[in-house]
Image (cartoon, rainbow, N blue to C red; front, side):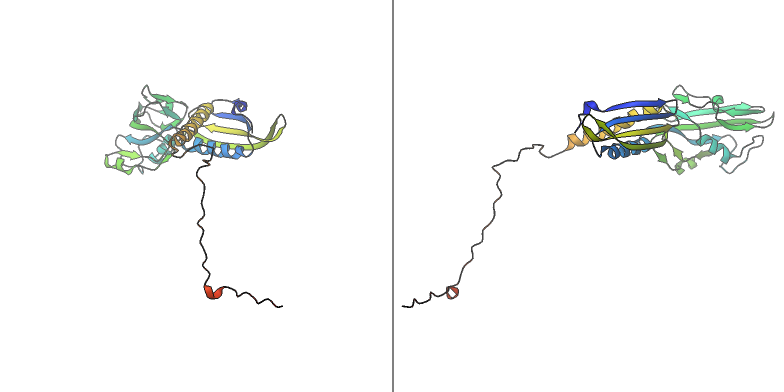
Length: 260
């Protein structure tokens, strides 16, 4: 068994949204254990942000078309679902679009709050096709985890169009387990981990995944209700109940007579 001090995480290469890391060495069999745990947490338990609803002045539902706008409402919603955005607030944030004239509306044209980071300002949202065209809309951005279905309760508000939302800032995680050696130990594991993200850096996502796993196992360790002594109490001896068998008198074998 190797010591935990020997385990390292090395960055092979990393850019804004892609990272490759080497986790090594790990004890035999731990490669898939650690790799699977990290992959599941990275894809499901990293906080992210997404558009959850849209409100356009004069539009009542998602099947509408708007004069002077190249996209119908459904296509606008699809563009908003691809919006790379990150909110540092736990409260819903309202982003506004107010524009007129012939132009392409991009993420950079949004009126945002101080809590919002636009990761891809060149993301196209819609196109105003005429000099008389105009748009007045509100976009709600929320933070959360994983995938959330449409909140139909929002339909009770006139003109509000809810969206299903993918909050996860991590889009892809792959890992490969290989053999490695340290000194005389030749059967150790190492993990080659690849992370692709949408709105946070891959190193940030990896750090948060490690923290989530640490917190979970540390909590379980503290909640463990049993004795952790590795010494068996010698006074607690197991006893076996002995049942006496009674032999009937008529079953007692008779002594044979001795012959002279």
